[in-house]
Length: 411
Image (tube, rainbow, N blue to C red; front, side):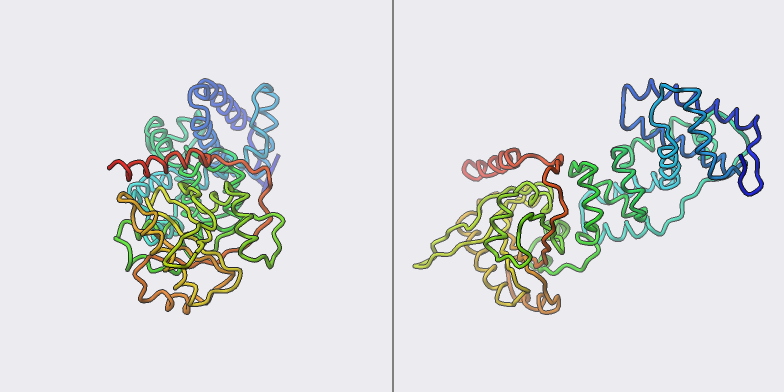
């Protein structure tokens, strides 16, 4: 086997195969006790080891094919070492060298309280950082070689790996991120979201395909939260707001009216809450309020557990008009008066339109005392009907909501 004139010397390659085999056998014991994290650490070490020896000996791309064949012959009972998976292990190690893992941990400490600006700054830093391996000398076993590469004891390397979000994300999700070719900082953000939101790999794939990072972090979002909410809550509200929202409404006409969209959102409430984010409970649709001698109906009312606040959602099947903000401001005032309890924070309004002029929308919010966010929404039919996520059930979220309401009644 050769590549660019370099031959794989039999002695080196045999020693290389033996060291890989030893690591595979030792990994089986560790995998029993901490399956996912240990499997990921094992894959990461394997990737580092293969990459290093490809560089050291000038072995080409066919090395992985040869290695997969050798593992099959020598360890036929061991699964997960196909040419494809070994290639992913190399990509995995290259994407997340030790210094990157250490930077993830440092970033975790800086982002205890989420803020769009803070997250965007940290993601940019990670995107621009350059993390590489250092060249070495000869073939040792996998653990010794990885230790030499990073000039650190293997147990200390393992501690760093296990403390990073990389260890808490399943392999299928890592493969999706590797295939997506997203920058390091954005990968970090999706990993954190996957862990915090309990996303399956299918949900993660959809979020990446619909560019959730841009919709939640990098886009300029229209709201007046900084002038109407105290600093910690305004940061969190801005962080939770997306633009645009993408709703899976199978069977909905492209030019659907508000009522049709509302009915679909309620019918598929679990998938609707998935797009809204973690910790939202459905409260009411077309909520009736009698104010003076008139009847009013708010489109949708949710409760956000992270914000400890009611969210009034107004849906418009047309582009934004300034008068929509006035209507929503009215409903926020009514919900504050009729529903909000002593333990609830200020009610927040979310206006969802089929498009907006951002300059007009920002002007329209000037002067309002109530917190209002304005976002576009798009209708998508891309999410499969049988999508399963690890979000809490509606019942679980509502049970938590009830506990907050009970505190209001019995302070």
